[in-house]
Length: 167
Image (cartoon, rainbow, N blue to C red; front, side, top):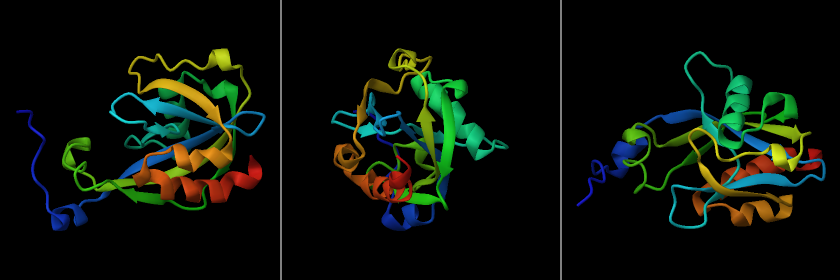
């Protein structure tokens, strides 16, 4: 039987911190949003690029780094247009907490950026050194929330509320 990690109570989880993270809403000139299909899930799990902030790294630098690591999109192909006014948190489902990030975090606390993609679709390459996505597509903003795993939908609703007028 595969080791699923330690059993954690809701009290254990409530004492954990949030993982510092960034998220990127990458929009093309038509206002459609990049989403990738996660490789590590057994169900449809589309999401926008996101990832952790390294120690000593600024959030804009982290966002540009994560975007390139996950999509192959280099900083010269985007313009940073907006950033979220604050941090947006989400909690992982309790069953995932011991399995993700070695059980050190209860969820993520994210700074979001709206970036405009000025390249060509052929410049997007999800076959990166450490691929996270098995497929990608541009989605109209009004279809975004419905395509996302349920526990992240509230985050995407908040991000859309902040950035929709700029799409």
